[in-house]
Amino acid sequence: MYRNIKNDRDAQTLQNDLDTLSVWQDNWQLRFNPDKCYVLKIHVSRSKKPKTRQYKLGNTILAQTSSHMYQGVEISEDLKWNNHINKITAKSSRVLGFIKRNLRSCPSNLRTKAFQTLVRPHLEYCSTVWNPHTKELTDKIETIQRRGARFRFSDYRRTSSCYSPC
Image 1 (cartoon, rainbow, N blue to C red):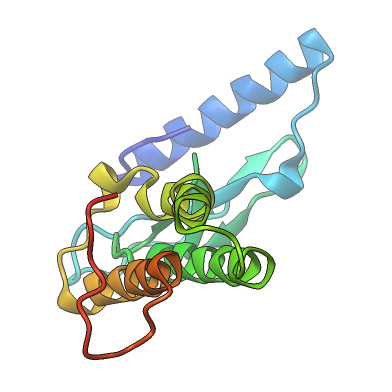
Image 2 (cartoon, one colour):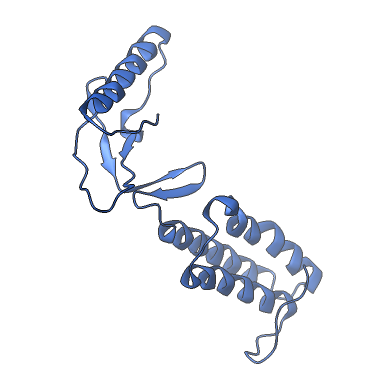
């Protein structure tokens, strides 16, 4: 549920929406788990400190969070992508380490397929949404890609160019 909150009336409208959702779940006997529901306030303006208000789903006060995973993309209250990039690079690095340990002696074409199938999807998922615009975030992603290229071609020399079309 999303709502732009500019004043107390907007906040009350959001609470009314949550109350309507609570009535709906009772009518249809389909329970929402309030422990999995969060309030994420996205700060559009850095100058104002938004009022904090508690929202309830049924009788449970919803927890407030500064970032949350939505459809596989980590969204933070400041709309920066650092948390998301850190998570996908950590996961990609773990998967790359797994295939490096298990496919070390396999042919290059098999290692390339494993990288393309198991690692690259983590790096590319929803990239049109979070496309990094800072050098720091871009470098984190490219580090994983360079490690993968070195593994695919068994060329671990720092002086060699490890890029080749996939």
